[in-house]
Length: 150
Figure 1 (cartoon, rainbow, N blue to C red):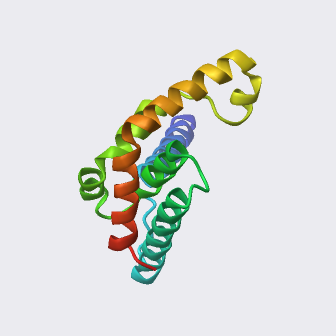
Figure 2: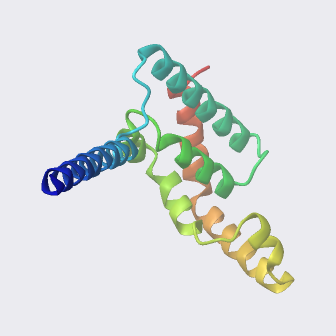
């Protein structure tokens, strides 16, 4: 009698362990599955919002409402979420070169925590990078506005 009870308890605990394992497996699978919405309407809406953002950022860069560095960083961040992100990278590679050359710069609170001398060094470095690539960055921004009109 006790043996049957022990077997029943072990079977129940084993079943519970399998159920927990299955739940964990599903949770991990959901985390690794891309969060791309399955609704085509939502995907199209997100794509249009990204295209609009590209246009507005390129326009702000051309109107000098932001530095070329900030514009490149923002444009590259948006472009990473496009369906044709690799094509964008090939077409507008200069933006990625500037973004990669300045990716190590501190921002926000980290920037504020820098000494004035360190801020001046980073500013000089940024200005040198921008001077080197400015013509190509401006041309890329113009092409973005043509390729992704509102």
